[in-house]
Image (cartoon, rainbow over all chains, first blue to last red; front, side):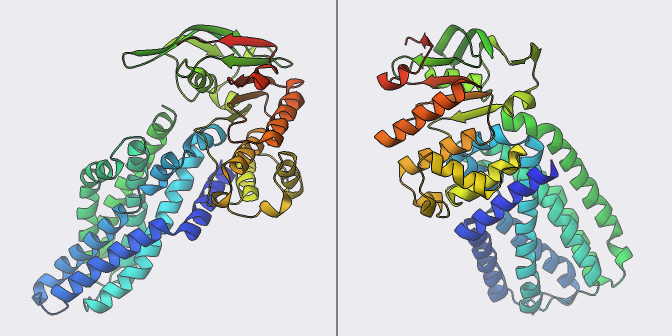
Length: 224
Length: 203
C-alpha cells in the first residue's frame, strides 16, 4: 500500500512541478495577502500588548486562505481531466488518500517555508520559541492537510466545487484555526516548548480524528 | 463475470432494463445499440464504477466470488471518459500504473508495449498532453492491458484511431480472447465482427 501511495505522491509532484497550477495559486494568494497586510498594517501599527495574538491570527489567516485556494485541486483535477476513473480502477482507495494527503502536506510545508520567514521579517514578528512555532506549524499543516484532502474528495464530483470546498472546509477547520492561533501566540511569547503543549495536544487530537474519519469515509466517497 | 437482470435508472430516466450475460475467457461479447441505449452504462456497471439499480453482477474465479479489490485488479478498461495523465509522458503513465498494479514490468517491457500499440519510440517521453487524440487512445489501450487483465472491457476502443489503429485494437482483441473475457461496446460493423456473442440494447 505504501508503494502505491508513494506512486500517487510521485505522480502528483511530477504533474505539479510541470503545471505549477496549485503552487502558483497558493503562492500568489499568500504573497498578495501578505503584501496587503504588511503595507496597510505593517510592524508598528499594532500596540505592543496586542502584537502576539494579532500577528498570530494574521499569519494563520494568510496561510489558511492561501491553502484553501489550491488544496482542493488534488481531487478536482482528477475529475476535470477524466483520470479519476482510471485511478479508481488501478489504485487502492487508501493509497490514493495517503498519496494525495502527503502531496497537500508538502504543498503546505512549502508555503510555510516561503511565507513564515517573510512574514516575520515584514511584520517584525519576534518569536521567542522557534522550536514551539515549528512544532505548531508542522502538526498544524498535517491537520489542515487532512481536513482539506477529505473535503476535496467529497466535493470533487459536485458542480461548483470551488465554492463548496470553502463552505465545507471553513466550519471544519475553524476550531483547528483557533487552536493554531493560540499555539502560535504561545510560541511567540515563550521560549519554552512546554508553552505550546496544550495547543499541540489539541492539534494532534483534531488531526487524529480527521485522519481516522477520512480512512473510513474515503473508500465510500471514492467509489460511490 | 456473470450479470443478471441488470438495470439502471438515473433519476426518472431508465437507461437499462433486465440485461443478462456471461463473460468468460475465450469468448468476445459485443454490446451494440443506438446512442443512449446504455452501452457505456453497462460497461461501467461491469467494471464496478457504478452500481446497478436492479440485478446483480458476480465476479468468479474458479467458482469462488472475488472481493472488490480482487476483481478490480483483474480488470482492464478503455472508455471515452477515462483518460491518462496529460502532464506525464506515455512511459511515465505506464510506470505509474505499473507501480499501482504491483507489476514488475521494467522500461524495456513498457516501451515494447507502447510500440505494440503503434506509438513510435520517439514519442514515449513526450507529455501525453502534446499527443493527438489517436495517440492518447493508444496510450489508454497500453494502460488497460499492461497488467495482463483477466477481463478486458473496451468501450468504443477504436474511437479517434485511424485504420492502422483499428488494426492494433483488432490484434489486441485477438491476443486477449484466448486468455481473457473480452467485452466490446461498439456500433462499428468491423468491431461487431470480432464478437462470438452479441448483447443488443434498445433505447
